[in-house]
Structures are given as C-alpha cells and as structure tokens.
Length: 603
Image (cartoon, one colour):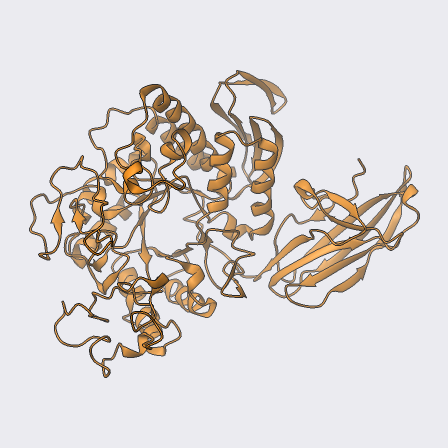
C-alpha cells in the first residue's frame, strides 16, 4: 500500500490534530513517481462555506517518490474540512482508516481540521485530576432522622431498598422517594474520597426541587433543605478544599420545574408565579401559547418541566449577572458548573455563562453534557461551537465511554482505536485534556451491568428491577470493570468514578442506577486498582496533558503511549483470556489475561 498522507503522522501533518488560530500548519505528501508528475492542491473548505485551493510546493524526488509540502497559517476559529487533489487523472486523496489517505475519483470523507481561539486554555488544576460523581440523595446520610421539609416526600429508611420505579395513577414517575443523602454525609466521607485519589467532585443538582433527582429546579438560589443549607454547602466546599478536593455543580438552565417559585403551577409557593400571574417578573422566561398541549412550551413535552427562554434578558441576568445563580454558588465555594443538556442552550448563552464562571478565576471549570463528538455536533439545525475557546472547557466524553465499553465487551481493537483517534484529532488539546471520561453516570446503566449483564434495550422497568448477576458472571464483570477503568484513567481527559462503581454496584437505567451507596459492601477488588491508577496520574505528567500515540491495536490487545514533558507512559490493555507478551520501551513485558499494565519512564 502506498503511504501518500496520514493526518495522524507528524511527518505528514504538524502539529497533530486541532490547531490554534494563526499558528502555522504544515502538510506533506509523498507521491510515487509512477502516479505521473502531479501538481497537488490542498482543498480547504470552511464549514458551510466555499472551498479554497492551495498549491503545494515540490520538494524533490527521493527513491522514485515525489515530495510536496504546504505551510498554511490556520484561519479564523471554526470547523474546516480538507482533501487533496492530485491534478492527475482526476485522482483525489480522502481520509481512510486511522487518518491514512485513500485514492478516489469521487467525493469521499474529508479530513477535519478544528481551529480554535489562540488564547483558549482550560484549568490546569482539573487536568491530571480524578473526578467523582455523586447523586446527592443517594451517597451518604450524615444527619439521620431529620424531618422531611415537604409533606409529599417519602423517606426511605431501608438504605438497601430499591428506588421506587412504578408509575403513579396518571402513568407518570413522581420520583418522590428520598434516601436522605446530604451535605454532611458528603463532608464526613471526604477522607474516604481523598484516599481514593479524588480531586474533584461533581454533584448532581442540589438546588431546591420537588423530585429526588432535582432536575426540576424550584429555587436556584437555595439548597434543597433535605441536603442542608447554603451555609452547610459553603462548609462542605471549604472542608473539601482543605483536603485537596474541589466541587462542581449541575446547572439546569434549559428548564425549571412547574412546581417552582418561578412558574408555580401547583401553587406551592402561594399566589403568583408565571403560570398564574401575567404580571409576574418571571412571565417573560416562558413561552405561553394555546398551540402547546399544556399551554406552554415544555422540555420534551413533560408538562412538569416548562422550558425557559434563554434569550430573555431578565433570565440571562438572573443566571449570569452579579448576585445571580452562578455568582452566588461560586461565591459560596463551588469551583465550576456542569451544564445539563448543553445542546439545548444557545451558544451565545453558553459564552455568557463562561464569562460569569471565569469572572471568579481561570481555575473555575465549565463542563457540558454532549453525547456526540462535540466538534461536529449539530442541534436544531445549527453547528455548535462548544469547544472553540469561548464556550465550554470540556464535555462529557460519551464517545470514549462507548469505545471503552465496546472494547472490553469484544469489539476489535482496530475499530476502537479509530474511534479514540478521531476524538483526539478533532478536539482542541485544552478541551481534550479537560474532558470528563466515564463509564457510568446517572443517565446510563452502571458499568458493571453494561459489561457483564444482558442488554436492556427494549426491556421495561419491571424486567430491570431486582436483576443481579450470578456469582461467576459477577466475578468476571469485576475483572472487566477494572480493565475498563484502567482504560478510562489512562486515555486523554479526566477520569470520573460514578459513586458506587468502586464497590461494583449494579443497576440498569434510571432509577436502578441511582441506588443508595452500599457502604457495607464486602467488595474489595476495585478500589485498590482505582487508587493505583490515581497514583499514576499524580506522579506521571504524561497523564495530565501528554500526547496520545497508538502503538498496537489488534484483536483484544490495545497498546498506546502517552508522552509528557517529564514522563512517558505506555499502557497495555489485554482483553483476551491469554497471557500476552509485548515489547514496552524495548523490553518484553507480560500482561495478565483480562488485565492491564502501565509502564512509565522519564522523558
């Protein structure tokens, strides 16, 4: 096979991947003489724009191979696509597997060039860290037997009980059962979290709301009283910081609860609110019209979740202004926000949120929920600009989760490597190294269940309820879980542990993935592995923001290299049931069946 161009090889494209606007990018081609003397052009097309051609310079012929190059200053921030026209026999070069050029006479897949803001940086404190996600009601109850703040909540005294899942008389899910997790419980467990190697906590919503998930916000400026007070939260942040841990919060800014001080459809907050009072100061936040089934625009048709108009000046000021939501919670000690359903927030609103977050310091972090490649994501007919430098710091790295689970479950490493390299090539390095890498969240099946149990697609909640793996299958699941976390911890980005994964908790989708933490679990095999992986991240700078290079990908073997300024690391993942021997830093090394090995050296 002729090697004409490879976007992943710095000999052909330098620098690798996304580039800062204004920086020089060098492209090189090696075209065998038998192709006939050619005059290749780089054809570069801005997203949604007209193509521009750049003639490449002939650099000479070596051993019957013609060399061409082009140095181009990266244009304005945005998304660009390119291919090469050889200007000979209508041949063009398009992207093939792993960045390799393929010859085609018809249009095919181009390469992507992401150009980002020249001053884009993300918090160094976040890079190289370890994130831990907590669903606040289900982690730890530090103040037992406290009174429920609202009469319609159901207290679950049995912490081993399964979360309620059956529908109410109207067919809806009320999510009104509470296990009593609170700020004090998290505070008491800070030494445990620090011992696990955790440096950042991501808390699902903590604001007052009338469901246990709290994604139906009732009061943005007040902590849910079952969790504690705003002062209790400030105490938690201060104590966490003393133990080297920072906290980010979940910002749900695309909708509120209908049962809120702002909308107040249910009347819990007395007279007033946008639903009842046309003169309410919150009325302009919402869109009322008889053509909506419930009389107002709601999130995905749920009448309990009225959508807000993010372009409303009063709403934006409330979220982003002085004394607003972001300012209030960062002033209390939070270190950033995760934006729920970021694809439903306008880009200019996200930019305003970023300015509000960064007003408290460049070390404050802004994460977005995006399920696809965030550089090519389109939402409501608009290409999103999340990661170009004026929006998010990072995104939830669902593509890496999919790749990791697929590899551990049997997908060939050759295919998995392509998925990993595509994200590394597309994402700006500041965003790549600040991405949230995870296996489980409150929105997904728990990792152990996803790896070792039956698929749940098409299954109802009654089928999912109470399912537990038999012992042999469970033990194999634990082995696979450790291997999967080794992958997530050593890829570019910041690994995230979903509470309870470290004791191999099981559970299908919501609400079964949101059970109370099994503090009395006898499972001991996962935590030592996570501690060791966290230690690698502390001691080896290659895992903070080092480059990613594929060494080998074949069948059940995935071998890659991370190169930092001070250290180089090689990671070998063995998904097979056989002992494998590989070459690492020029020496043979053995990797156990369903195991991994991490090797480091000074650069």
